[in-house]
Every structure is written in structure tokens, then in C-alpha cells.
Image 1 (tube, rainbow, N blue to C red):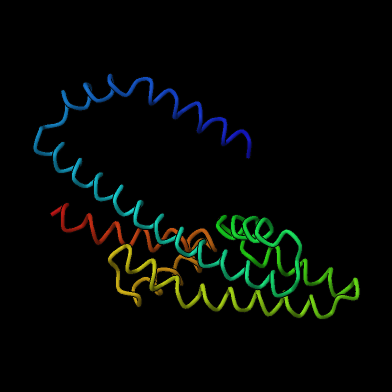
Image 2 (cartoon, helix red, strand yellow; image 1 turned 120 degrees about the horizontal axis):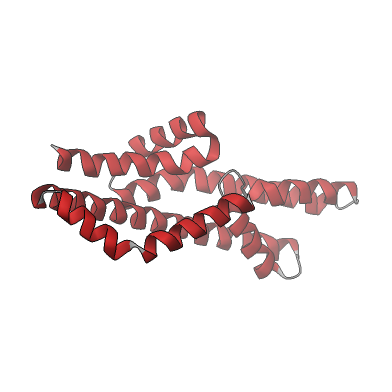
Length: 184
């Protein structure tokens, strides 16, 4: 909601403004060897986040290409723009390509465009199939996880927290594999 976003932005600003003071305070209270250990863990967390983001951007690119080709085949005007918007909706947690394609197919069917409705449903099925096959492999290879571990993490994340968990649990698993050897 807007209140959450506003609070987050104000908090981020205040933390950034006080960052030098916070750093001095932490350095004065944390022994150097522990601080060094936590900094290494922080760097690994940032690296895992960056790698996860790269894998998501690759998946978005593949989804965009699939949507663009499908829209061109269906004769959709402004295909690149609609493919981009659909791809951005797909990137948001909880939403997906079905948020755009399924209602569009339903409306096309009601409007008498049975061919377009069928084409949109086939396009949706193709995108879901390709993402289902590629996501564990891409996310796993970028995060350094076995694809089976990634798939299990995605499934467990989905069961626990829905689509947001499906995105976050593989990232948490990769982070845990990175951090646990460091924490010993």
C-alpha cells in the first residue's frame, strides 16, 4: 500500500542520512574479526541477490520474446508494447502472464474472436510451459544450486507463501548455502 511504500522510502532516507554515524557506532562495538566475517556474509548475500536478479531478467527476456512472437502471429497491433507490459506484469509477485492473457482470451471469446481467444490460450500455455522448464535451470545455474534443489525450493516456497515464496525461497536457499559454511 501507499503507507508501506512511504514508510519504506522515509526509513531508507533516514538510514542513508545516518549511515556514517551508524558505521562508526558499529565499528566501535563489534570486534574487527566478527565485523570482517559479517561483511563477507553481506557481500555473499548481495552477490546471491544480483545473480537471482540476472536470472529473472533472462526469464523476462525469454518471456518477452515468446509473447512478442505470439502477438505478431495473432496480428495484435502494438505487439512490442503489449508484450512488454505483459512481461512486466509477469515479473510482479503473485501476478503472471495469465493476469493479462486469460481475461483477454475470455473477452475475445465473448466478442466472437474465437480464433484469437484460442491463440491467446495457446500462447499462455507456451509461456507457462517454457518458464516452468527454464526457471529451475536458469535460477539454479545463476545461484549455484542444483536444478532439483531449485525446483524443490520453488515448490516449497509456493506452498508456503504463494508465488512470492516461489521466487524468494530459491534465493534464500542459495543464500543459506553461501552463508552456512561462512558462519562456522
